[in-house]
Image 1 (cartoon, rainbow, N blue to C red):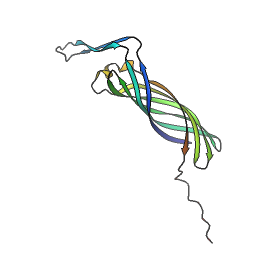
Image 2: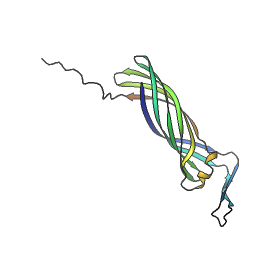
Image 3: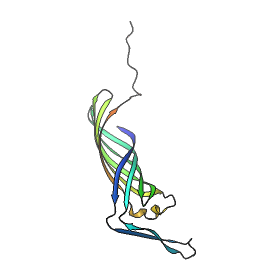
Image 4: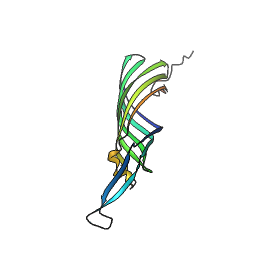
Length: 163
C-alpha cells in the first residue's frame, strides 16, 4: 500500500525557561556601518507555546492479513511557535508508523506514533523571534488512535440483477 496523508491540529503545548535569558544581535543599521550590539530580549523565565502544527506525509504499508495493515510514514511538518510575545511558523520533518485494522466494510481503526521535529523558522515577521530561532527547537512525540471511513471511489459499482 502506498498513499499520502495530511493532518492539522491545535495544541496546548507550552514550555518555559527556568533561568534568566538575554540575547543580543549586531545591526549595521543603528547609526553605524560597523554594527552596534543591540539588546534583543531580556527577562526571567521565557514562555514558549506551540498552539498548532500539521504534517504532510507519505505512507507505505504492508498487509499482514487481509484486514491488518502495518505502515511507516514520513514527510514535511510545520507549526506555529509563540515566544517572547511574537509568533512565527517553523518547518521541519516528521516520521513514524502505525497499524490499521479494517473491522467492517469501509471502516478501520488505527493506532499511530509520530515524531515531529520543527527545526527552522520559516516566517520571521521581521521580529526578534527570528534572531533567536536557533535556540528554539520544538520536538513533539504524538501518539493517537482513530477510526477512519474509507470512501473507495475507485471500486466498481455493485452488480444489480435484472430479470
